[in-house]
Image (cartoon, rainbow, N blue to C red):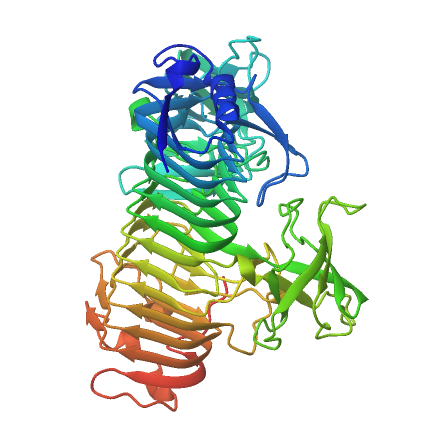
Length: 638
C-alpha cells in the first residue's frame, strides 16, 4: 500500500494563527474519503485553534453521561468513516474552545494519532487557591487567587460569583457561564504539601451557603466573607477545583464503534464533560500518552471526570507507558454494561433496559453477538451457556425509548419469570463479545481523588509494573455491579504483578481504600453466597502501607497472593485495631498466601491476626490455603 502525505496547509491550515481549524480539517477529511492510499495528515509544528461554532454536530448517545438531555454532540476534530489514516502532529498544540468534545473517532479503522498535545482555552474545571484566611473578632473571610487566564464575574448585588468561558470569535458571546459551585455534587481540594487530592462536600468549600459577601480586591483576587465561621475545608494554600458534574453533556474525546486505534506520544491537558470514552470498539492502544494538567497555565486539573473510560470493548485494550495525574475521577475504568431483563416476550426473546440513567441510547447488541445471563442476587455461574443474538431492536428504534431494547436468541431462555415477590427484577445480561483482553503496564498514577484502576472483564488482564501514589480511595478496584451503575462483569484471569503501591492516610476520610479492593455489588448490595470472580493473582508487588488493608476480597475463587513485599510506613502510621489486619477475605475459596515478606512492627503477626482462632494450618513459610467465609478480620462495610 502506498502512503500519501497531506499537509493541512494545503487546505488553508495555518499554524500559530487565529484561524478556526474545525471546518478546515472537516473538509480535508471529507475529501480524502475513499482514497486507496494510506493517508498521513500532517500538521506543521505550531498552535492550532478549534472552535465549536462551525464544528460538526451529531445526534448520538454516549455512555456514563447525561446523554438524554444532551443528544447533540459538537465535535471539533471529527474522524468519521475513515480507514488507514495517521494524524501526525509534529509536536503541535491544539486548543479546543467551549464545552465540547474535542476529538472524535467514529466508525473508523486503523487510525493513528501521534505527536501532539491539546488543551481547552478555558477549561470547565475552574480553580481557586486559598491565599489567606481570617477568623477572629467576629470576622470570617478568605482571600482567593485565580489564574490570569480565567474569566469570571462578581455579582454586585448578591454574594454570587460566575465562571465564564472565553468569547466566540464569531458571535462575541460566552460559550458557557457557571455560577460558583451551584452545579457541583462535590468539589475537589488539592494540598500540594502532601500531594493529597480529595473530594469535599460543596458546603465545605469556598461557595458555601453561609457566604455573606463576595468582593473583588484586584484582578484575579477575591475575598469571600462568611457568617459565623469559615467553611470546614477552607484552609490556607489549598487548591479548590470546581466542575459541573451534575451536567456531563459530553465526553471530552471519544472512540466509537471503531477498531485498531492507537494514540502515541500525546499529551492531553484536559478532557471536558466526562473523559476519553471508548465505546463499543476494539483493539485500542494508548502508548506514551500523558493525562496531566497544563502547569504552565497554573492548572491543577486534567479531566472533568475519568481519563480513560472503556464501556464495551473487544480485542485488546492496551495502556502502556502513560501518566495519569489530577483527574477528578478514575484514571482508568474498563467495564461492560449489564442490561436488566424487564420482560419475557416469548421463549427466545426478552425486553431489557439500560438501568442507570447515564446509560442510554447507544446500541449494546448486534447480530451474532453472544450474551450471558446472571442472577442479580448471586452473580455466580448459575447460567453458564452463551446465547447468540439473532435479532435486536435498539434503543430509540421502532417506538423504543432510549433505555429499552428487545433481543432474540438462538435458544430458549433459562428462566420463566423476571420478578420476585417484591417486584425486584431478577436477571441481567452481558454482551460477552464486547469483553476485552486488557494490558495496563509501565504507567504512573498520582494525585487522584478517587480510585486508580477499575477493571472488570472475563478475558485475560495484566496490570504490571505500574506506580501508584496519592490515590485517595482504593488503588485497584474490582467490582461487577448489578445494582447501581450496572458496570459488568466477572473477572476470570487477572494478574497484578510488579507494581508499587503507596497507600497513605487521608485525614477525615471514612471510605474504604485497600490497595486492592475486590467488592462485587449484587442486588440490593446484599452479599452473594457464592464466588463471583475467579483466578486472581497478586504477585511480586511492593506495598508501602500507612493505612487500610493490602487486599480486601469478597467472592473470589482461586486467589493467590505471593512474593509481595509489604512495608509499614511510619512514624505516623494509622494502623490500629482492625486496621492492623493486612488481609480481609469474605466468601472466598482457595486462597493462597505464599512467600510474602513484611517490614515494620506489624510483621508478621498483624498479617496473621485472628488466624489461630480458625480451623487453619500455617506452616513456617507463612503459606495458607483455605476455604472459609471470613479471615484476618471481619468484613468492614463502609
